[in-house]
Amino acid sequence: MDGMTTRAAEAPAAPADPAAHLAAALAAGGTGLRLDLQPICAATSLAPVGYEALLRWDHPELGPVPPIEAFSIAEASGQLLALEAWALVQAFRLRAAWPAGGPFLAVNVSAAGMQGGHAAAMVRAALEATGANPRGIVLELPEAAVAQDIGAARDLAAQLRGLRAAVALDDFGGLHGAARLLRDIPFAMVKLDAALTDGMDGEGPAASRTRALTAAVVDLVHAMGATVTAEAVETAAQMRALRDAGCDALQGWLLGRPEAAGTRAQPQRT
Image (cartoon, rainbow, N blue to C red; front, top):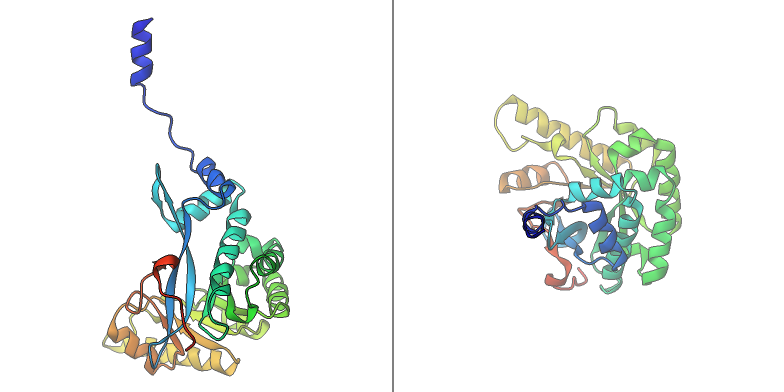
């Protein structure tokens, strides 16, 4: 009897169930979940013109859970829409506390939310719950999901514009033939994928071609009536090259890493 008790006490603990932990966090109103904000800066003045809200999950047992892993856990366990709805409410609540004419706040829309037809209802519910001004909100649609279902993307973009929110095409340039997306959907903003601009600050023919391609894409986006934000800016040379290419705004670690919303000073009118 005593030996069995000792062996039981020494047995390793059962592995943590990340999906159960996520469900518990959402049921508790988001315990351990937060949104960090990364600045999006004007290419010329480098003043913040907006911020992107990025999900973070810190758990006392699991530790910091990488965002891609958190979303994978949510998707596999059927909790992705609940997690996305939580993030929208938290992001809109932040924006509602900022000045009406201050920087915009960009929030990502998942492929599941877009293709399943749930995203517009979640955005509408979050706006009603927080009282946020939709004119200060930008919803980012991932290029891969838009290309996979242009009809769903077109419908969602129209619904979001009907709510007076702006719509952005995220990660543009990561797919072949993506230019047709600009024709089919009137995005307000296009964010260039790092795969498109990588190496444009270097030397030699390859760098020259990349600079020429980036400048041409920027001109194309401008001709479609949208602004251009370049992502993943990490060096001063990249910043100069992207500025020379005509980008309107820049985002990346050079200009500011994501910070917890509570640690960042309240954005002011710019």
